[in-house]
Length: 144
Image 1 (cartoon, rainbow, N blue to C red):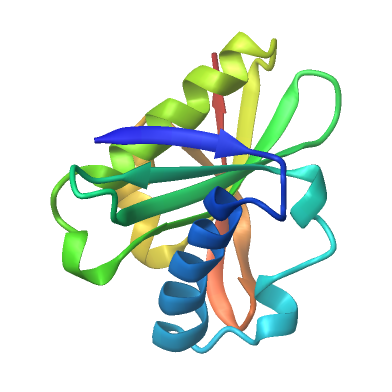
Image 2 (image 1 turned 180 degrees about the vertical axis):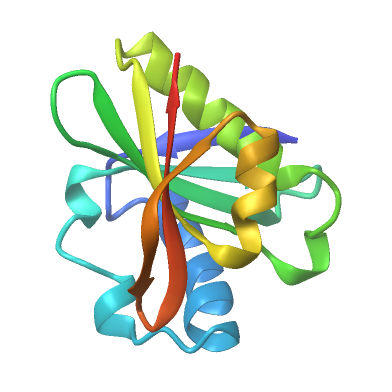
């Protein structure tokens, strides 16, 4: 198992990230393509977790915001690999990267179904529920 990251939207790593996101967000959850693949793609750092057979298992991206703050987005695990802790592994890798780059806060919009996952990882829910791509979310933050 390995985790790699890139900012190169022409790389195979990025294409693997998009493949997972298409499957999970667009096909499973019905998110329109114009919302899922957005204007921030080139500004983000894209992470992909690969299995022992080099299959792409999970992805997420980090979008730098303001001084000291970065946003975790598009975290997804392929359906057949869920329930094996891969989500935690890729989020921890993104968090470590953010720390190494000098960020002290990660923010994210968590789907309601993922609140417990992020709470276990130390994220704190803030504010009211909001809709993103017609899916209920809460803002969550974690400080290092």
